[in-house]
Length: 356
View 1 (cartoon, rainbow, N blue to C red):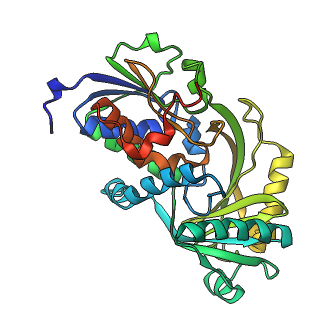
View 2: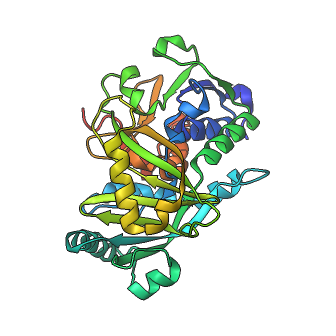
View 3: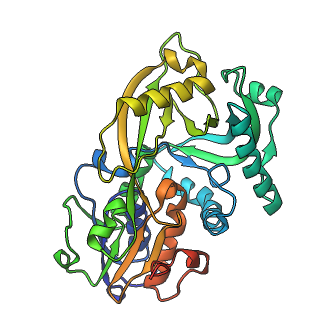
């Protein structure tokens, strides 16, 4: 490892999963890192998430560059998770995902996704009713299973964020809980902006916008049916719903609204989540609601994040949309490579100036 005196100082602005991963990887590489994490951890966008590491079931036909980027990061996930899960931190909650549909239109959409993935040679497998019921007995009887992916993962997003910050601090990063409103407020040699949907406020030329998503956290009660053991992604009359296992229940999400920076949880949003979740897993109505919240996904015009150098002093790692946790390992490696002067080829599609 290089001597610390050979490395410059770096400010990382944004304490979510991306900023914390970047801070950890840079600190381990002997950069002198300060992570400006903003207010309490509970206010991070990462705190409001389902925790899916699901490049295949989240894919959409035609978005090849995004899928390639996601798969490059997925290859790094086993080692990344193993290092995060050292000591007391346990982040993995499930392995494998099932994609199911409620009606003919939903089946057609999912089959289109499956056909595209199969054409690319991706590890998706058709799923029969019998197989689906054997794996998840609590699924609704009328559902139409379409495909499964054994390699996908679910993580506890909150445990992951706490583990990332702990690893960054252990590696030597300084964690500061203040907000940065202008790049001139920090004095480090280099600055990495990982401020999620607020990135464009610090770098106005970059096209990152907030998209609101509402989720519910549910806990199993003594007489409730067991929660799913896999990620269950349901397509219900054109809407998407996911059920992500937790040790004591599940996370159900997520709505999608273009609402600016509004994080108000709406009655309509929760109504839709409950209706769609019940259509997939009827026993959800017996669970206790332990949390309802809304977060802001940072989204770009082409759904590919912005990762790389903006100018001689500034780099950006933002715009990951639904895929922040999935893309965290690749993003950290790409920012480290940029600072080392050797840009990562796998991240070329995420160049931040591609819209210029």
